[in-house]
Length: 405
Image 1 (tube, helix red, strand yellow):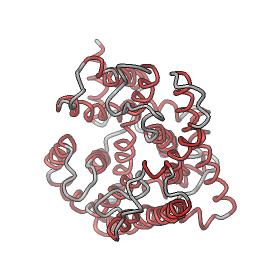
Image 2 (cartoon, one colour; image 1 turned 180 degrees about the vertical axis):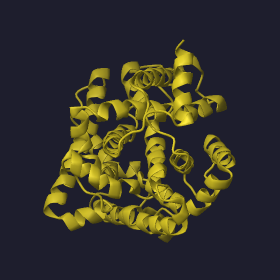
Image 3 (cartoon, helix red, strand yellow; image 1 turned 90 degrees about the horizontal axis):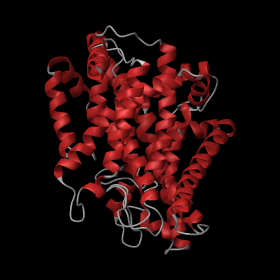
């Protein structure tokens, strides 16, 4: 019966006869989704616990600290849906133009993405690089440098170029690989448009295959962005409503939580001491498809509540928090680890939550302060997106700026 209910619900969505969201409801849901997902990204970038050699990317630990490592790994796998869902929303918004005006619209959107994505990325990376160089000159053995993808004692010109522009390697702000790939996706949007209009399913198969295989197609760091961007564009062009009924949404979320739990517990079920099986890697990637639908469905339910509307007001700060949170969280994690009383599960989880909370609080506070006291600086750092405001103001601002991230 449950299978038939899901089949019926998805059938209505595919046929296009599911209820359509209002512009206000869509904008508020997107704002809510953006800020919640970026906070989730902060959890994801916490990485492993201090002085504990258990990578959350593998799953929970099997020898000790099972509870703490389960919590860390579960949150990481759960928020693996962040990049896909943000990319899907971006694709849906990017292709909102009239098909008869495709050429000028694509050129305008590419230019706009340069100022709203790539230029802020460069600004942030230069800022990070200057701060880190000063820190290196003052204290070259600081623990933070072990978490960075650049070694100042042996870096050459190409390393510094990549640190700022992300040409062949991740920028110094690691999280900006997503922004760089999103901008690259915008650059090839005319090719995506051509595929979407003439061979939509072939393009979907090629990009989906590259994503599952872990191929960057020579120009991307990862194909998560372009594949899910393409899916979002497909939904927009086919005018497929994005509404998901409450019962279906919560049922899918329950299923997603169960799948993530199973993946987190994989080390207890499979020997991963040597290498991760290919099937497990593919399954880990594939579960993001379920995560995207489940998270979007639940966000639809939550964003319309009073609390959801309050959270959505800060959707405009999502890009700023995304930009500021790393390597900030790495430093916060180091500082707070000095006050860790014991390596017990309870204290490790407390350290985890506190590190994320402090990072988010600093990022949001600085963003709000700049938005009020130095709006021009904030506009540059936030890609022209408004900071926050009333629900109505946020919705109006999102229609102009949210497509950029």
